[in-house]
Every structure is written in structure tokens, then in C-alpha cells.
Length: 131
Image (cartoon, rainbow, N blue to C red; front, top):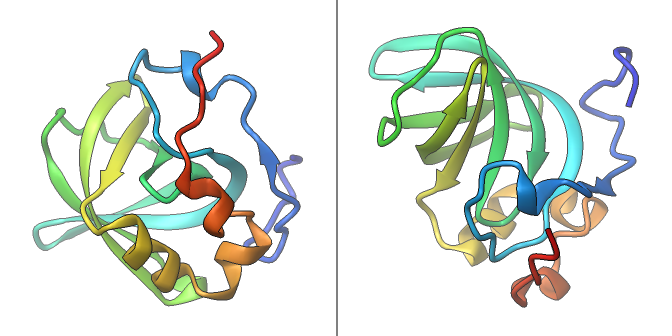
């Protein structure tokens, strides 16, 4: 996707490198996106970008590194979405977060975007790690 991608640019594609990015096994297929977001830790909010999303978590770019285990809220203001999450890995200004809600609840929170992104029922099966 180009730098001009917006929240409404939902031309989602599978992230080919998802299984090798962090070494963590993934249960759900990820979809590449480029959405503006915010990360809230306590009373502090930080500008961020979502780089990919699944029913289980997301890859986030954030200028301030957060330690593994940090609990935070992922906010997507343009969609009215707020998800409780926990940082499970970070490298430089990129981190992976695990959503603390069930996959069913995450799908419900994403509403119509879940279908557009391909996060509907077919993503409920485990994805084989080929890397």
C-alpha cells in the first residue's frame, strides 16, 4: 500500500511474511492494512499506525517502545473501535499486540470491516506456518 492509504482503503491482502515476523505461532490469518490509530497506556495516548490485523491481534507502529507484557488499548478513532490488548513482542518502533477479547468479540467490534478485511468465519481455523 502507498503512503496515501487511508482508513477507507480496505484493499486487504494477506501478509506473506506473517509467520516469520516474530517467531510467534499465529492462530489467525492476518490482513495488511494501513490505518491511523492510537495506543492508550493508562492516561497517556500515543499516535500509531496499524500495519496488519487479525482476530487475535495486530502489528502496530509506535514511536515509543512498549515493553512486552504492557497492557494497552488500541483505538481506531475513524471506526469507533477500542480493543484491550497486550504487547507480545517489539522490534524498534514496531510491536505485536494480542487482543484480550475473544476472536468472536473482536469480529463483532470490527462489524462490517471484519467482512471487508476477510476476518469472517473462514479465519477461525488455524493457519499453517510455512516459514
